[in-house]
Length: 436
Ligand code: FAD
Image 1: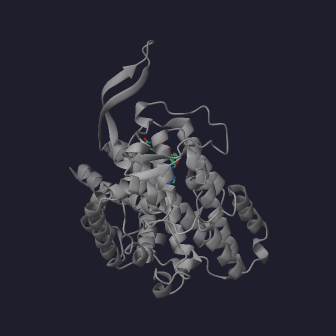
Image 2: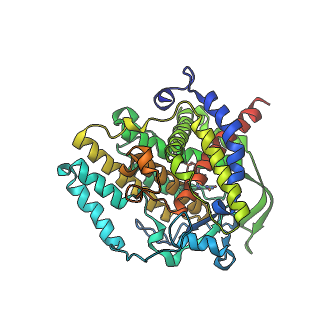
Image 3: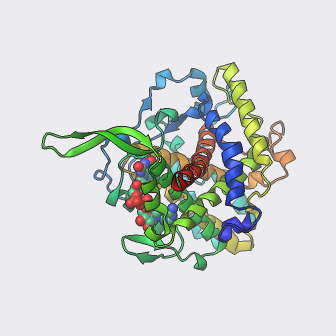
């Protein structure tokens, strides 16, 4: 799908219509039902981490719509907790507890060390480093005490009322602090990025983040609050609203219409498709690995259904004809190694910014989607996934099969992809609303 990635869509085999039809007819309906299964519904997350970049005691969204309904730990199926606590996908009692050899600080300082000496490192060292680090995100597993389980189906991503300066501060921090080149600024925000000046990997990084932004905006527009009542405080000021959620085409136009976005709306929408293709390819690449799991929750009937549903979706994904080719990235010796390191560092930073999001529900979905994308990137670029599939994915060959995903990563990967799939499906809804 190179044309889709680099040029205006429309005149190649892999165009918007092709992806739309693939997603809306084949993927979206089955994925939406898969994500209601117990294995995928419960996400473990720390929503109370301190923002590492600025004082975030102000700017919190106190609207009811921002609040996350937590799931009491006691009500969680015991087996699911056990799977998660072991950080393994297949539930097997651990033969022997392995001590944690490095603290979070040690691991972080190992990132910094490696960056400063990146130029002199060789590929083998990097591959070792990758295998050790594995992750492109700040993982909540590092602070297990503050984590909670959230039932994602009770907390749909939708309009929350988190708007204005605080929300813009986060987006600005994400783009200006982590994208690679200084943007040209238009008015309130950096509307145009000089994508031409970026190298391929930098463009992909920027466009992936922008695609995520698009997906969030799509959900805000698709599930917009249509208030039925407003709640005021004693002085008569509106402090909250209640109502129903549904598509709001005016909101969609505000966010994507070329005339309202300085001409950028269509490109932002294309970035959603790019991100979709990235994650689609990661799922295809990891399919032999993901197909073998038991998706264990303790309810054997549902577990079988879940496994079969996952296998069915992976079969459909494998039938897609224009998968993203990640081997075109990070190509070319030392310079490429440095670019890969920058990529990882920027990604890591974005995942930490998520702890600064002042609306709990937005933070939940922001963290999940960044973890999902981080997992996809890990699948695409970790050396443990580069060996021939027959060795890496043969789980019996223990010494080779050292690539592991935690349950939470798998949940984030599928749910993150589910967000993108729903956004692309949502575009169809807006198209119909527009023409009617
Ligand atoms: P914003 O979406 O805030 O965008 C700011 C500026 O970024 C725009 O003016 C434009 O210049 C640029 N921009 C916009 N879209 C793109 C793009 N796709 N690519 C590149 N540049 C772009 N709100 C909710 O109601 N529900 C949620 O679940 C939710 N989750 C969020 C999660 C995160 C991580 C963050 C940071 C915010 C979230 N928000 C959520 C807030 C939401 O994203 C918007 O910030 C808010 O609705 C205000 O929108 P806006 O029109 O002012 O522009």
